[in-house]
Amino acid sequence: MSSIAQITTAEQLFAANLQHCELIGGELVMMSPAGFDHGRFASNIVAALKNYVAQHKSGVVATAETGFQIAHDPDTVRAPDVAFVRAERIPSGGVKGFFPGAPDLAVEVVSPTDRANEVAAKVQEWLRAGCRMVWGVDPENRTVTVHRSRTEIAVLTAADTLTAGDLLPEFSMPVAEVFA
Image (cartoon, rainbow, N blue to C red; front, side, top):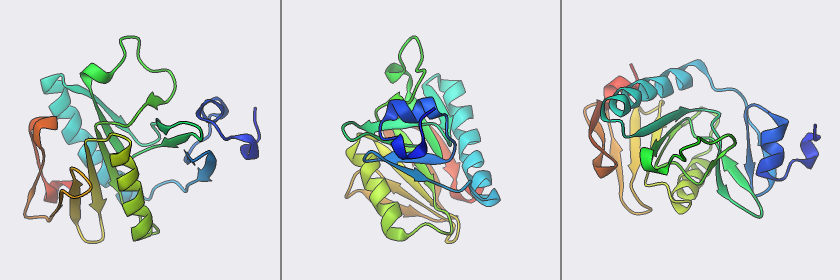
């Protein structure tokens, strides 16, 4: 097994079988486990997406700790709190390691210790990597910020309904249910 200091590639990270970390530009970044509310809100989104995906057979929903390799040389492996990948992008034999590329939808639940500029940078990183949509879930303000591109951004409150446009047609979830 490699020492943590020697982990600079996606292959090394996968082989090391470490939990709660990401590889950013070839540098291993350790993270604390998520808090209870963080996990609760993410699971509310997972449940709604799983129901939709099962009904429409439109792809796969993955949860936290699922790695997506979004850059090479130096490698970057990120793990959103929730991810959706369209069915046509899933290889027929499955994916044994990290998914090659960004998910179609990445959901990031903001932790109390997250800095605003770091969250914004992560959202932009997902979009640059090819993510079609990013949802930023802010438990403190009870909002979901929907990023469809670097410039198309909408902030939704508890009175609004979360949708995913042509990515997940007919999907809807009241924002209030995210925080239930």
